[in-house]
Length: 391
Image (cartoon, rainbow, N blue to C red; front, top):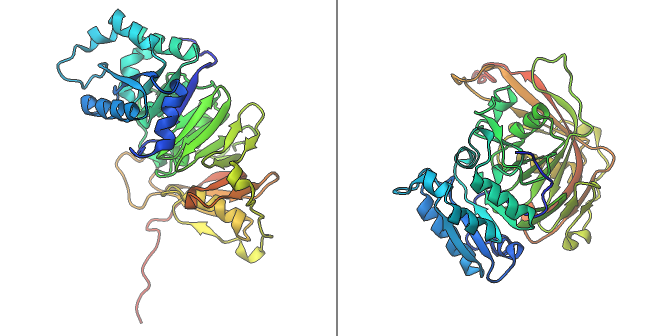
């Protein structure tokens, strides 16, 4: 099905959304129309769709929505999937709703059910018609992963993706296309170090822009405008000026632009302009002059929990010209095509580096713009280290 310019709102939740996260849950209801909004809930990706669907219906109902669980899930017991998926009355109910919500779970179940073989079912076409008419399509975790025109299907090992394990129908697949075509979406982003898989996927698939959303956080996307709500933020990746060295035998890039958008920030993809939350504007970060003796800052695992954001913060708060980090694996894995291959990340200052700091959400309350990043393949020693001998 051809990808059309979205006219409705797409709400991407990075996963692990807490039941008491009023900012996110209420925003789902408000974007669908507010009090009394009709929202169709698809627990298609869930291991226990009946239980998960009921939880989401309850969470939305507590914020004023009229939510309904749609029985379209391959793991739903005693329900004829083909019958419900193609039921004209059910399809009409979904299309007449004001919003749709996709649960978390396994995103391959969503695309295999609603878009088998890349062909949109009548049910999916109804959801697209709802969206084109101005309705809301929201999703958390797996439900967010399916929103771009291409998606990660089952790529849990970031390092293997960096090493080139990226097969159509296995690690990557067609998404459902509820955001603009040039934007690639990922979730659980900083917590799971998914910069390691996003960069090579964007490069391989030809995406200029990537958006990695934190857990317990939502990115509200309206056309090419993005707003961040929740307890964390989102990483915006821009490869417009990035290059690669074709002579190197593994993934590499130079000049990626990374920006961390915190709660309340807004960004316009068309103009490239970011509008930080008002509460942070009063506290701009003034990067201290870089000291030559401070060039050796290094993170041993750039793919660990929130390491990328820590490195970006360090560039703006400490006298560092750059921060380096490694992505590698200690020990061998049977499915690893290059056990001794690792990657060095280099984050550095460049023109346009800006930042602001808040004080409400602690370590998440930053706006960090235009950090540059290079990634190059390196050969890791095995063993990486040896113990010192005693005297």
